[in-house]
Length: 300
Image (cartoon, rainbow, N blue to C red):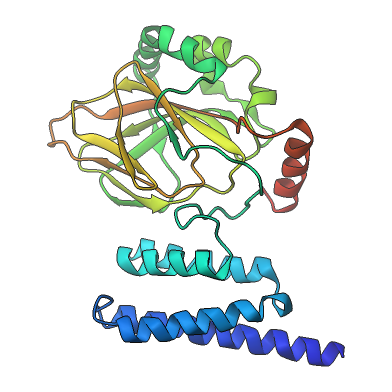
């Protein structure tokens, strides 16, 4: 019986690979829109795949879908990424085609983007944003921001300085230059979830950060505008485009697909924001504990 079950799992993985190859072939021909007949075959294949779900490890199936979407986004094959994301919803591996984190907790509801966040730290950040800007200017007189260590930049330059890591490091040496931030988020050890950070992010003119999803849906990411050139820098969260404003804040669930641009001319000001990650507001305390354990087991 065990050998038969193993054979069925292997067969299903081969079957899934065949499905992805069919989609790949469609994409490689560069004609997704003229490939509808074959898309119908793919849909039938995915329906068959769903019938076999109980024989296939759900997590492995989900990882395959996530990997395939990421591969398309990395290659700027946007239409193909959308097709596979929607197929993932049909297959039951995604609740929302825009939301594809590696770690997904059920029952964490909330908007992908909140332009008027009620989080307790937001009012203080807005009130004291001028002090934070002053501290940043003083910091840049003797220190530099470093390149963000992510392979997400298709053009331009993206730099940051991390003030707090939730991975056990805590407040960094750089945070000593930002006493206002430390005072406002004085409970960072409890309020910043695993995988979370507090940082300052700078985007130079001409920069594009590719579409991607954060690692989990346990956090809310707050952005406070510290230096914002007019009408040239923006972020897309799921299907909504949001622009930053000087001294104003918004938040988003970064487990949803998001993408960033600075479309200013070479002589435009950089876009600079303060980023603060906080536990998702709809997570109960016991759920936070389980999520922390799970993420540690996965190496976060």
